[in-house]
Length: 260
Image (cartoon, rainbow, N blue to C red; front, side, top):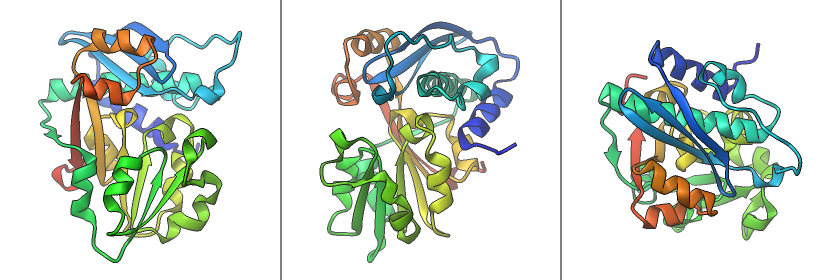
């Protein structure tokens, strides 16, 4: 069986979770982000993940996410089901951060990524990460790849990835690649020694697990007020609004901090 990245994350999260009881309290594929709310002995935690709106279908009903089915959810053929699976991973991961007392360094990838720039260099951004990409312009040759034509602007289509990624010293991938099932292909293309970054709220799986699977830097966020975020997501809110409202704890995690 092929060892899909997302499935490995799910399996490792469940292994670390052990016999702890997790109850799925609420879930929704909202317009911009999918969410799953869980109840635990430490309280409620909300995980969010990118909703692949291009795959929304009238008359189709997804599945109810179950913790024990997590490895299957994240490799489901339906990308909306995968989004629920990734959101559930992120919710459980937030619980694990609290249970394990894991200290995450508050920070923004836009400023932190400059630490890894050694000119001359080439950087590739996969997904809509324009603010971070702009921080590197003038210091690196910057390429952006975007799947969705409505978000592409000056970016290249993602089908050009094989022509660009193998030449890059820094590879930044949005967590949405775990939802649209492209992350394995992207990681396979990277050149030896390239710094690999996973970014965005969808990339909120338990950091030591991601580091153990070869992700060098993570720039993500945890939800601070689950019910406030749920109400906004139901109204179509996106990441920027949640950030402006102070509802997210943004962090940067670097691989050398952990043993994996």
